[in-house]
Image (cartoon, rainbow, N blue to C red; front, side, top):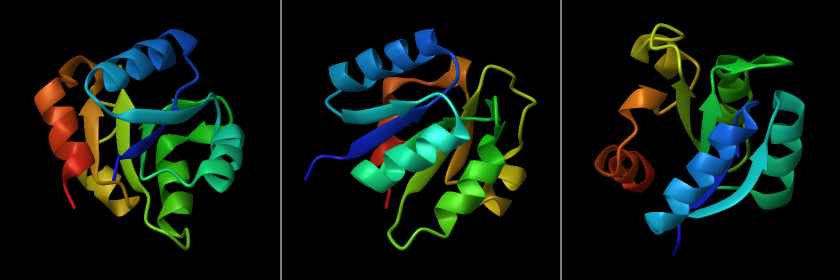
Length: 119
């Protein structure tokens, strides 16, 4: 079964880049959101397997969204990302229920594959 992905970032250019990258690497970016509110709506509609979530969003933080998604009645693996490598630490990400925190500059095919396919 294919891994479905929600991309949550207020920067539309990053969402386009992430969608292209994930599609090229064989994943299905199901939907996109630019805010916490929109992300919650998309999650309810599509129930993705994984959410790539920017730490800084206009109506909250990716850490807050991760905490909310950790309470979902189905499993959603959250990968926190940021262009600011100091935006979160692995410990903060884990405390918020996220599987990982990755600076956007460190996203690579091998890393994405390990994060998306790790159970």
